[in-house]
Length: 314
Length: 314
Image 1 (cartoon, rainbow over the protein chains, first blue to last red):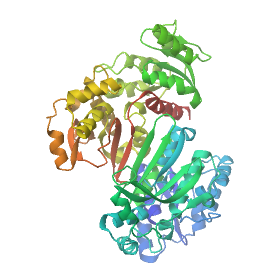
Image 2: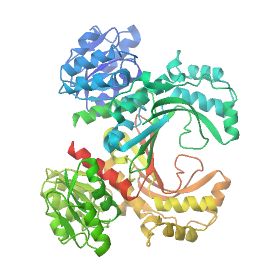
Image 3: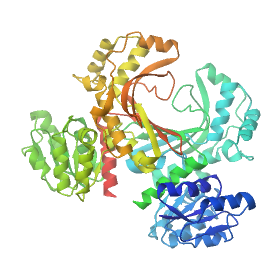
């Protein structure tokens, strides 16, 4: 399929770089201020090299990328809250043109699920968003295969940065600020890590899970969210004395969406270490499924995007 | 869709019982000597009650079930090796009638993969077989989503009976024969558990994985297989002294198919306990995915069958 990729951060870059390997072609690539468009396929390496040099991917405008020739729009611009703009507008424009949309941007799916599905209903295009929950982990395709109505709850570790901080604090006995600084040095945490450590990012993913399980009705405002920054210094020590540790656990259950630090068994399934994520799905007839892997990262998230593109191409 | 279910063991029964909940209808159900057929949908509860009373599901013959009106044939008769008959013949008949086929029977997929795909190519029907590897765990749909060519290896614990025996032996310090007897009393091991404990069952699943990853070329004969019956009595103790334990691990890699007892870290991802299964997929761009859950059982395996039916209905 021909792909227009909006967003040239880690995910957008990786989608553009890996598309050819999956048998697809990139006809447009845009960052927030520039774009490169070619109906016969852009030169991805050249565009990314140009961006590294000059800060621009090409001489076209981002609006031209949205109007380009493509079968599927890959929306990988930064997640925004509330009206989820400009991502939501990009999605609507592509659907109005009867094109498919694959989202890595969580905003439209977490914050405006009903609007998203309404726009899809009016279109010949379809919307997929595996990459928005759990990075490379096939969470949403599993929910889809098994039928959302047969899944009674989803819970897990959905933010790699917070998990890295908690696992380092527990393993090394270090303080929150020190580990967070280390994570920033390693590139695991962003300069402004607030969405990761205050639970917002995990809550967006849980709102998406809740929307999929219950066919809409949730947004960040509906979530009960607590982060890890205010975790008492001795909480991890007290947990360890009892064979347990602390993880930032997100849940989407019939009771709603909740995110917060929870005690979990030290060697238990939920106590993944480092930046790994895990999702547990409770099913009606098949017990509990555990799905774990890399929850973030450019190539990892791009793999989930391209799996969605493959599904749309079937 | 209308389903004909061949096989009225644990899996076939559960498929028939759960089909309605997934929006499908059972028009035929057969065990090895009898069948019940109704183009408007059979009374599943009555057929299964009759089988419990009389040993027969109805007054029709098994051949009539194969000729019945259906959109997809669910092949859930016992796995056989070599020519994989009579399962393979059932599959071929359905494909010749341009009907879809969903397999829970491992034989045709492990032993005659090329024949299976050739029969599918000549048909308007398609073949799916999620239930043959890892029960409820979405292993093959994940491989399909991500693209078989992007998965470099698969490994894991693929037999719940052998895993139950090994985890009980390690946890309780009991001997092989004693734990196996206990497993038989609990219904976890069959009266003849040889396929489970000698590695055959896990090897069939690995041959299926290898066929999917490499587009054919494997059967049980190509697998290097070692079971758990001859594990030295002190192997688990020696492993435990070193923080490790023993699991029956199956692998499908570029080097081929291997199954045998291996040392794994005691609290590591592969050391699932009891009858749980786990599959690790090594990917080109997304690191390692871990998928775990219930690898066997009627409703669990039926869930995978019905997920395949849902995919075919799309």
